[in-house]
Length: 162
Image (cartoon, rainbow, N blue to C red; front, side, top):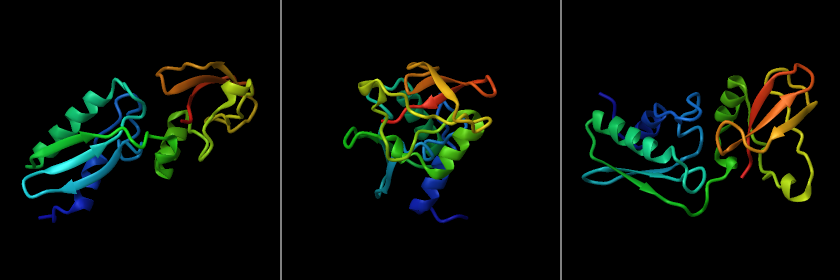
């Protein structure tokens, strides 16, 4: 029988997928901030990708269900400070995004291009061409923009930096 330590719960939480990007776990996405083991329960501390994210209720239900199936009493605590940032997406998560066809956000560079009328260079996740252009600031979900590749002609989502 596996020892139920903090690593056990982090590994277990890899099974909870983001409902909007099911190739990513909530650990890959950086939503899980901490796991605390108390005498009577396991507490999972999460931060939404943005305030009001509609997926968070679903994610909380899935966390509770998974840990209850593992025989645990669980408490999910949502914290808003510090605010989630795309820097929290794991290296593995960034690669999963690319393989899924979504351009991952640039590391450590929040996209402020809209404020200055500049376009950010977003490589195509399919052919790696940098000859791409934004079609819409708003993509399939609030946290993505829609781009097109001028080389392979394929549309793709870009995970916005914030």
